[in-house]
Image (spheres, helix red, strand yellow):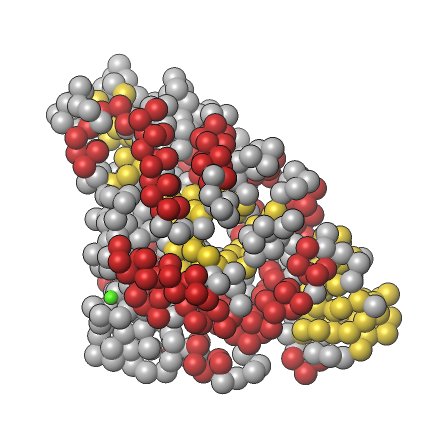
Amino acid sequence: MTEWWGDAVVYQVYPRSFADTNNDGIGDLAGITAHLDHLAWLGVDGLWISPVHPSPNADWGYDVADYFGVHPDLGTLDDFDALIEEADRLGLRVLLDLVPNHSSVQHPWFLDARRGRDAAHRDWYVWADPSPDGGPPNNWVSSFFGPAWSLDERTGQYFLHSFLVDQADFNWWNDDVRDEFDRILAFWFDRGVAGFRIDVCHMIIKDRLLRDNPPATTADHFMDQLRGQRPEYNSCRPEVHDVLRRWRALGARYDPPRVLLGETYVFDLDQLASFYGHDDELQLALNFPFLLGDFNADALRDVVERTEVTLPGEATPVWTMGNHDVSRFPTRWCGDDPRRARAALVMLLGLRGTTVLYYGDELATPDTNVPVDRLVDPVSVRYHPVANRDAARTPMRWNADRGAGFTADSVDPWLPFGDAAAGSVADQRDNPDSALHLTRDLIALRRELPALRAGRYETWPAPAGVWAWRRGDSALVAVNFAETSTALNGVDGTVRVSTDRARDGEPVGGRLVLGPLEAVIVALT
Ligand code: NOJ
Ligand code: CA
């Protein structure tokens, strides 16, 4: 039997930017609850909410200071319970974000750990003596670049931070850390959470000997080459699988079983496959080679084909075109060309497996041009315009009011609104030809056609610039990435959804013509 998540559409909510109910310019849990009807109308199965816990917000929630609470900016535990209750009523599952690689340096555990080498929580984090020259214990670099170690003057040792200096890495060799995280998972599972997206899933456990990483070679991924090293000893360690099996077993004690969706930020598909274990680790592993691939037929077909053959037989692939860390797909992939963005939506929702939409994807929202003096993400501040995460984190546009239906008209939101011309939920709901209706109709079609739901993936022969595939025996997806018309042969059936909505329902007898940048789903006869 397919579990609910096996062919699901999950919608990622960035809580500070979804809807603000108390007019402080910051989205909140009550705002999510108030707009769950939008998600139900869209037809998604569930939502993943980026971190909601108390946090100094050095990394906007990914620096947790209390794993059992709700950030006061976002509301209270009661608001959280109300959200779950409303989601249940609407048949929506709620996933939270679990941040197990690191806590905030302001977390009481780390404050205690800093007190002395014999502090109760000292060993909950990764500490090491300076190297003989007084420098960092090894050569590891932070994912955000620069050394991954900082010296704690008072205790004379370095602590590890694989991201910001404000985020201290836990020591996953310590059983107390494992036990505490079991309690964290159970706490939220007991409150009705359907599962977790697991932040930095692949990195949580580090080499026990803290060995130096080898230099990167030209065979390594571009980002590793930029960092100058292959993350051999601080990523994808074999012992991470023990932790994932433990969490999977914990989730299996619940009815329905809780789901684990990993932020498996790896570029090697064998590594990606390893996180599914023998159906005893993650049920779902985010596919970064797809997300960060080039938007053309050859590149994306290649990732999907290789993923389909590399994942274990029973595994569900997970496809996404955006998240809070990357430029939005209509800008990054589609050059802000709405035709391409529509084709991308057909492509995404035509793939086998689980789809994760990022809030605003359903509107084909492009990046927001956030003025430099409004940037709030430290990574964006440091690396814009090369990297700009704030551009994809700006408030949702619900309507055409000054406050965009996100907040009161007089309020300046925590990040500026995007260009009004990009459209709001209300505008797009009024327009049957909008990206919003296209997304909704595609989701509905996935529900309607069993082949689109669960049918196997099989590449269909297509001319250059076109990527086409069959799903099971009775559905065909074809995406024309080219600016010129073209055709596929041997297609008999009915166009069910096209980016050119005038073609919906059109019969196809042998030859399927595709207009420039058109994408279609055909029910085959
Ligand atoms: C991945 C998260 O998605 C990102 O926003 C964060 O900065 C890092 N992990 C560190 O937690
Ligand atoms: Ca608010």
